[in-house]
Image 1 (tube, rainbow, N blue to C red):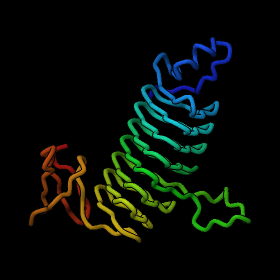
Image 2: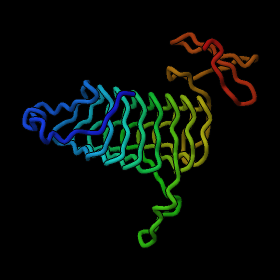
Image 3: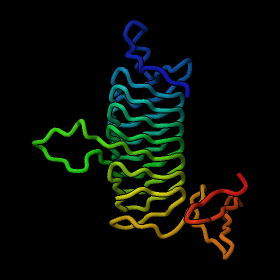
Length: 218
């Protein structure tokens, strides 16, 4: 990942620097809309785009070719891998890590405290939540903190995740329950009596054994 600290423009011709809302990163570029707020100390990879009214706090690490939509908040300490897509109105709080190719749907919600109270400071109790490579979290879904989301898992719109999600699992409802399995391309997998399924788009073969799915031709 090609990243460096966000440049303020001071002493390097700030007017020209800000004019096109283009920031230089290791000789490459990322884009931020003029209304976006990017605090000094944030690290942002080449090719990433940051849109209207989005706030990136210090000590955030964002990979290459990411897209952060309108009204997104990213708290200090958050890590986003390469090619992460964050749709409008998403807040990513301290303790969250999203690996490469994660999709966060519009207005989905992360939490980082199990039992919040306004009068009780629980900053030392933030729980970590890791969203693993290729996972999708649908619009308006809620991820209760401390529950890892497996690789290529698919969380349906409006679902409330209250426990760990296996790789490739399809989760819906409140509380979230698993109703099936999804391919890397986002298609429902239908396993035969031998525990084999084929993605209709990619042709990849998958095996289901003891409730663990793996790709056979990887």
